[in-house]
Image (cartoon, rainbow, N blue to C red; front, side):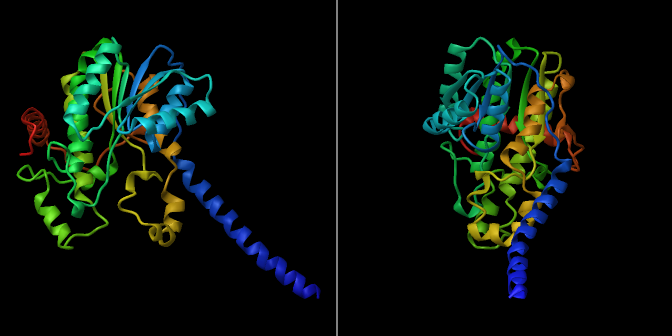
Length: 337
């Protein structure tokens, strides 16, 4: 009888031991994930966070409001933005001001309407955080309202246009900042200026001739983000507007909802548990770039884990200049090249 009881106790203890072991492994793995230690009061400062109703954007908004900032939640769906505000208020009833505003980065008209409202209501902007982004399988062939490939249109062109329209307000807020949320996946990007809309890749994807695990549209758009950061930083030197990019790391958010199925989480559970950060953990470097006093005046840099990161991508000055010029032409023409 005692042997039976002992056996049951052992069997019952095994799952608990596994859970504890996984927890310890994750804690060990996350020890290198930096935290933003800045606690500077941001009262009186205005921040715009695109895609602030969920994921990293929401956690970034929470961190800024905790520091008493005024945060404009620029969301494609205003109702979800209001829900996000209600969630934040439950946690922080005495935090900074929260303002939901509609912004669809897949529409130049929406971007223009958003900027016109901002300019009517605010004299200056202290920080613009270009966080919103999409990852959609190429085979779905999704386009923006202007007809651009969705990753090019939203992740790059949308923020390119938005930022340029807000430059006068950012200059008035000097010292101010632009933070561009990119990814180290930019190192896998490859720009073909004869086909930035990826028609060749999309056709191959439709025929099942591509690796579904790699989305060149997303990687390319993250490379464009870094090039945009570098170009804008150079153009704004001496104005008091710092421009930097960052990688939040591989995070558990809704960003990959079109690419990762439920069974992937089961098959890849050990990898996800060890390498996938929470949205809050991913937001730390974004908040660092937006608030850390010690990096004020430093511009044109890429950050990861709250520290400067040296990219492995072989950046080319001619490619950088060409991307800016082509992007400007696309915005002005309002049609894909």
